[in-house]
Amino acid sequence: MQPGSDSEPTLTRDMHAKTSTLREGDMLDRLTEVNNLPSHSLGSPFLLAYDKQEARARDEKCILHCIILDYIKGDSQSFRSPHKYFVAHSVPIMHNNPTPQCCFDRNCIRSSFKTNRLWTSLYFHRYTIFLLTVRLFFRHIRMKRTRKGRKPDAAVKKVCDIEDLWKLQLEKITEMRKSGDAPVDTMGCHKLADPLATPETFRFQVLLALMLSSQTKDEVTSAAMMRLRNYGCNVDAMLKIPTSELEKLLCPVGFYRRKAEYIQKAAAILKEKYNGDVPDSLEGLCSLPGVGPKMAHLVLQIAYDKVDGIAVDTHVHRIVNRLGWMKTDTPEKTRAKLQELLPRSYWTTINPLLVGFGQQTCLPVKPKCGICLCQEICPSSTAKPSKKSSGETN
Image (cartoon, one colour):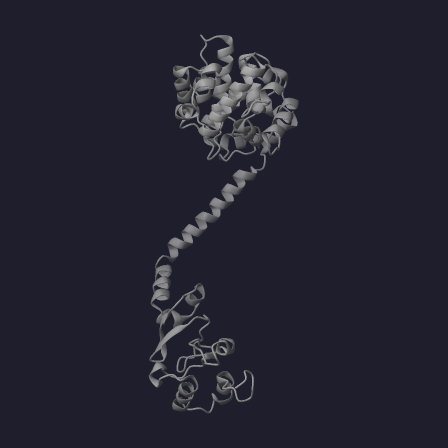
């Protein structure tokens, strides 16, 4: 018998042609005859789908899928979920793979244990789900507003008109930082080098402290530098120490294995090219492995008291963009615009000032805008304006 021939037992065609005239017993007999199924395997007559492709693929044997196409006899409620069902007593008693569509079908819910339990749970917790949805919606709006920054109010516009926004903000930040108790003030790279060491060793320790500070908290960097100083922190010692032992001294500094490799390579370059001393130029410092522009500028400022530019790290980059001074996407672009904006007298102090401010108040996540003195003149502030300030602006 060829597929598609007139003699092929096409169940679907027969059912559509004779559904209105077949009695229940005749339909069951017809189904069991065509598909070689026992009569007790089917309940009441259903409109059953016949998959021709699967039938042909399996040697023209009819594969019955208990998918209700139109209605259940006596109930007249449709099933919309195209999944296999177990059939007993004319009603599907279990659903193999319930889907969200099943929650909209009363028959499916009533006849499936899994979907019934799911729908019951959803119905029982409907008010909680509604409140959570509303809360998540407003949280999304609030986070979106925080990322983009709120619209400048009248106070910000007034300051922007006289082009003194950054000066006023720096004054308030300086007032908040006058205690000098931020981690950068007590454990910064200028505090980690041994002041009693030789000038060459002092400069090398400043360089090492900056190399370790990348992607590492100041407390961890300070502890690692103390271990290095106790071992012997100079160029010759870093060349002689085994790499595995150096890694133990640096751990748990961020990327300590890579930094141990950079330190030994940098020590070899300093010994070979600079007679064991740290170079006093940006080009020489940036040629060392693991040293970037920010580190190079800080080394020159601390070790040689030379100011060739502003050291911009993640704190400085984040804060100046939040304050509305500029809109940049990389620290290097921030450094270039910041050097155009600020007078040269600010180039040395701006880094520790903003870094400490970023460590204590203007945090990367959940900044403390409620206690910040710049909240009234910061376009990114999430604090609600006070009634007093709003009355003054009006």
